[in-house]
Length: 133
Image (cartoon, rainbow, N blue to C red; front, side, top):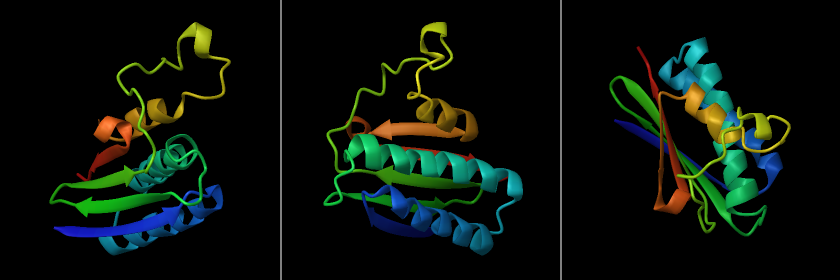
């Protein structure tokens, strides 16, 4: 099993480093374009959430991203140093009262693009799993 990781300070411009990390993974593990597109959107969204909501944009706090490659799946683990959040009671962004609200789409998107989304450590860790065949 392959396992690689990166840690970045909580600055939104560091998303570029996450994109490079994913591009390198695409090359290294020969990911097809469909899964690559889903991974790019879902993982950068998760890291953005960790920077903005988890670490509140505090550049003294880091966000770590680990890639764990299994036989038939690839898993990305995003962890922040924040206080976590209640991931059991998320508003539905498709509900009529939330359609106009700018926030709340990130986790909804992640759940649609990844095959599995798991939260742990009170929401400080999110794991996104993508099946490769």
